[in-house]
Image (cartoon, rainbow, N blue to C red):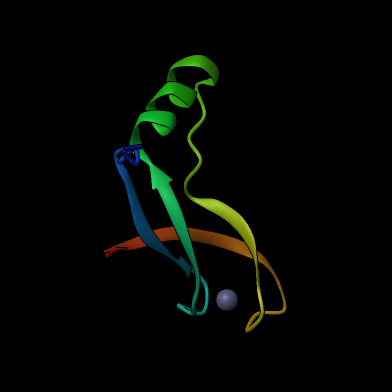
Length: 67
Ligand SMILES: [Zn+2]
């Protein structure tokens, strides 16, 4: 029986920092994030994404954990 691997992933929402529109839901992997930080010195969040309310790319930041 194959077991599904449950990583330290969590579902988070991304909110536009300009208009506060809650536009994206994404999977956030803590381990991958830390690995990326160690290797490149950069973190994924806040991330620049297209906001349909602002109609341009804005900084989005992680707002809350969703289940
Ligand atoms: Zn916006």
